[in-house]
Length: 434
Image (tube, rainbow, N blue to C red):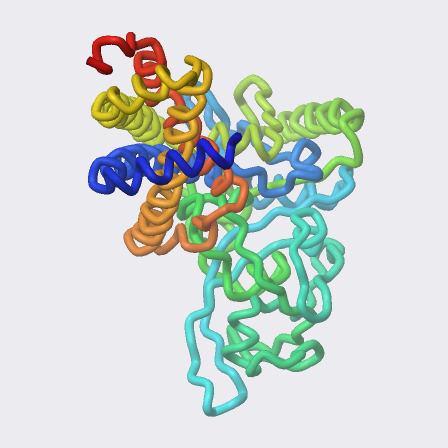
């Protein structure tokens, strides 16, 4: 029977092509607008490390001056000082721990055919790579080096390796930069987490760095302070070491715990650490340590802003308007064949048969609307990529969202056609037969 109802529906749609296309296009526009905003929210808030995001924590310590807040109303700074970064990492109280920050410097490849360029550098500890599950194409990262130990090693991004070494396995090769010779120990595979949860100094969707170096090299070579830098001290001197010894915060500090049970143990360690630092004249405020796992950190940073939800609610309202318009058009379409319905009723078709046939037609219109909606959805995503280049890596046509779009379209068409279908199957055939 479904094939019979489908055949009748297709004939009805072909007889009223203009009206049918208008109904499908109305549904398609509403669905496309709604799904574009929904997919952005869904992709922007996606868990970057789903298998262990609840065990990886961002650390905040309140080293700010008394009667002042680093972040209003009374929150600690989002970064930590050099002293705290080094002390906590080398205490090794977690499974993995790594402090990191952004810097930059000139890269001068040995190959004269490759011009020098300014490389964006992430200075970090070796446990950064296993903690954030960074994929490697060649080689690997380094181990966390002991305090005051410096090794001139580097990990390159895939793009940098392509630029400098033509994409070949460069592990073991040397790369002149920052006035030194660095040995390449690893090359990353494609890796651009979105949002860039581990450091959002320049935004949640800023591309990753070109080169990764041991954190100690930043101090050894006195590399620039990139990212977010905040100080409450007014006079710390001009010397580089003075900045490192100051209360200026510039380093993101992350840890990974083996299990949830270790969180309390680590919090106790932090309490003891701050208490110890208070005896040295630091941390004048009441102890206020904050550990946020990845999803809590993303929520705290409001990666998906309130304006995005406003756009989504507006898109939902637009979809409702489209549904009302589609319902009106479907009602017009079904009213035009009241005589046909009356004749079918007189020949023995019951109300359920008429309702089923009308519902089948609305489902087919929903399928056509889904195709139109998917086309508009894809054009919308491409438009977003053009307007916001930083979104390129995470804005894509997800298969789940595509199936959801089709489902929403069919459901919308059924809802839009429900009342017109009931009205048609309830009409009295006698008046139309005369």
